[in-house]
Image (cartoon, rainbow, N blue to C red; front, side, top):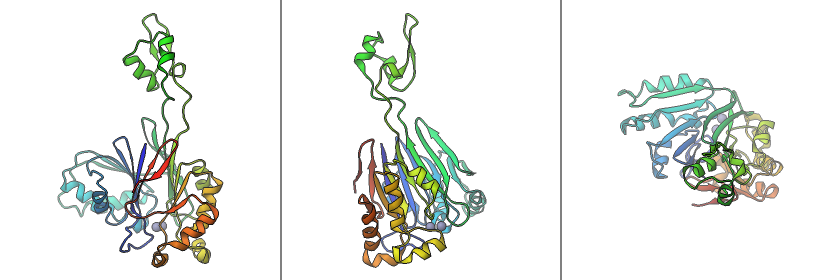
Length: 311
Ligand SMILES: [Zn+2]
Ligand SMILES: [Zn+2]
């Protein structure tokens, strides 16, 4: 359903084991890249995510640690002769940032790049897959992203279809894809007549950089997976507030209150790394047991009824 790969999980500066923020969400041939921290091109390659796939890039905010990997990625795409057009979405400052950086790609790009300076709302939709930006509370304009997949119909019921006289074949396919069909005698059959009820959407929410805020709480409601920043441990709660971030406990409280399936803590300060992020994780788990710590190249598969860490 969704394959989520953490390409960078650091906060502010890269460390030996952690690149800067970037997450690839793959779904049916699409790669949705959330943030593009430094060296994201190499991480994509290491993770074996093809560089000529259908891709949309979503940048949470104009802070260097979240977008400095973009020029390198564009250069790489050009060197590889990428042809597929690329669309990049983010706060309005992104348009100028890309324009300036494109000048440094002296051979020019081999593909069309469109950059959209956006406000909150749905940014992308394709066959039940969608990405919505919501404003969060950081420093300057910053977004979180909600990625959903909503199946068009529930499971197809062949017996019902036969009962109603729909012949096996292309019409079955149309109905299970959510389209109505017309039989030879003129009767119109709606997909709801031959399918189970639609399942709930599968939902992944990425906080970006933010203090705890209402928009994030709302977006996270019943998410299968919440990927939240957790820059600080509780002893530094004052710093979190001052710098527009949150603590692991605050992230866990959001996950608990929003009834999420799994909480992944990312973008935590390198200061906790000497202890392998333990204080961050231990504090979060006191509040929300289903919390794990993100690490670079970790993969999570998110399905309708199961979210599991695969590597
Ligand atoms: Zn950041
Ligand atoms: Zn930031």
